[in-house]
Image 1 (cartoon, rainbow, N blue to C red):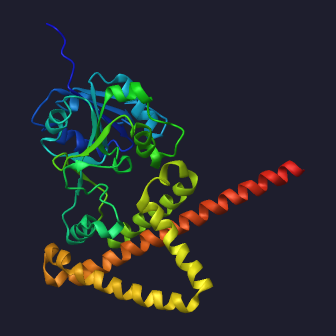
Image 2: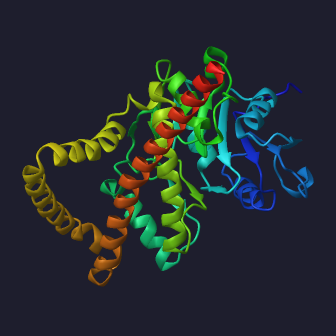
Image 3: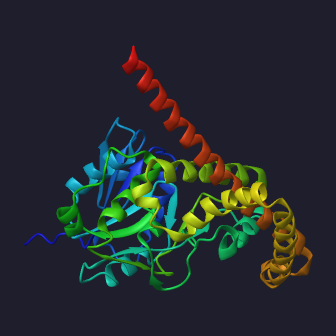
Amino acid sequence: MDYCPPNLSIIIACSRPKVVVSCLTALECQKTNNFEVIIVGDINGLSSKQFQLNLTLIPCNETHTNVRRNIGIKHAKAELIGFLDDDTIPEINWVEIAIKNNLSFDKILLGPEKPVISSFRTTLIYAVCLNYFSEGTRVHVNYKHEKVSWIEVPFCNCIIPRKLFEIIGLLSVEVPWDMDDSEFCFRARNNIVFENLPALAVRHDRYPDSIYSFLKYRWNWRVRTGEKIIEYPYMFSRFLPINILVFTPWACLFTAYIFPAIFVRFIEISLLFYAVFLIFQIKEAIKFKGIRCVFSYLCLMVALQSITIFGVQLGVVRALFGRIKKFVSHKLAYLK
């Protein structure tokens, strides 16, 4: 009997073998079974006999996710490569939708994520994240079927044609772990279309049952965003919302120094407009759980916006000082 390769190879870079069990259990329940799963990384306690899947387990001591993914790509047999995180839980028709919507292998598919937990605080956090104005982006929570930018593709939930790796190369292992997806998609941006599919959804354990934990996580994420803007300007300078986020506060400070009286009036007008903006967000807040949750919703939105603005600025300043310190050290070493 002739061998029939799978339609989809799902690669999971695993650092939490106990957590990935939920992902594999969800893949067992898929409506189609013409796919393979390749787990690369920490596989202690896992066995291919545990699951009714075409499952390959590959140990890898190197912790960089792209090293592990590249190993998975080399072992993959399908023309479509799917990437999931070890803490994602794909919906029951995830594989079917991935294959059906990329039969011509001419685009990268991505989809939104939903919270795993269903508590009030988790639902509130997710509801605020769904609002575009909370952070100025719909990355991870886009429920529109549309073409998107290269910077909006997360490797925790995406489908990539195998031929693209042959055209532009494998995933970079030189970039930090938190740029594993953006660097590749930046290289791929002229060769392919990025398409968001609301039905290609996963549940992802990134929305905790704690407001403090969520805001702390988002703060670290935004500080790191600011650092990456300085470290990799050739990539992030092309994204207009990020440029606005970076330069607007500094322009305001410059204006305050040169024209203090005008700046005070500017602040007053800005606060007035922001108050009007929050009033318009009450409708979105009521959609969450009614009028009684409006205050909680708006407070979390303000906190998230503040974290985004100040976190990015801190990251920019930290990266600039790092570069200046490195430059001075290099010059001093040269003079000696």
